[in-house]
Length: 313
Image (tube, rainbow, N blue to C red; front, side):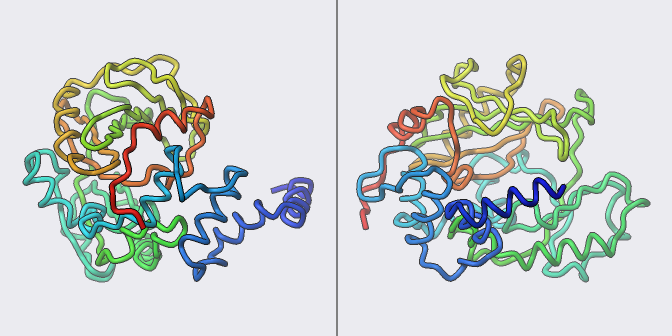
């Protein structure tokens, strides 16, 4: 970061209360603030307007309401990357799970000698911190990987955006098979398919390709008919052309309906690797309820699809 940019950021920190709150919140300054007060303040800092919890209308507002007032105990199991596996096997079949190679409570328990040359290590309760994608074990810095996993295990992933379902997950390290699609160039990344469902009804699809640290990440929002949705995600650049429909698309929609039945909103994530459909995860609060859509009124349109349950506060 150059001096000019550093000075600009410093002046903004001093003069802009919303910016200052976001920075301090990211540093854990407000971890002890009550959930409702914190989410109201963070919402205003991000969107520049008050969070309406008395009569929420937009999608982002309704997701905040669900965080605060609709806390189903089974969400914790479904957010747990390890505990959810038997649930998924029962609902759609074990063949749609990425093969599990091991599970441990501590990095010190991992026998790296017994692992194959390629594998993926991750924590079961968070997203990203501690992740180790090993493509060549002979080049792996094992101590560094262990240290990153310790950081991941120590992270309270529920705090930053108050996604409470992560708080009580018994923290573990899981090892999954490294999945490579022989039909795709590894440099271009595997395409992710994320089906946004409202009470068991798929309404739009995130189709994304993410390559860490690269500027060619892509994310398009599509209708269930595999056409461009009437809204986009401001943060990401869309694909230049809509990617081909996956071979197992109809099955993907069918399984999404099964896994989202009876849930006000959940995003059901999949991969298709070597023409086989694999479950990825269930996401109850997409982008933690802080997505900037374009056009802006799309937030209201998507919100109209989300019917809040009758259990009001």
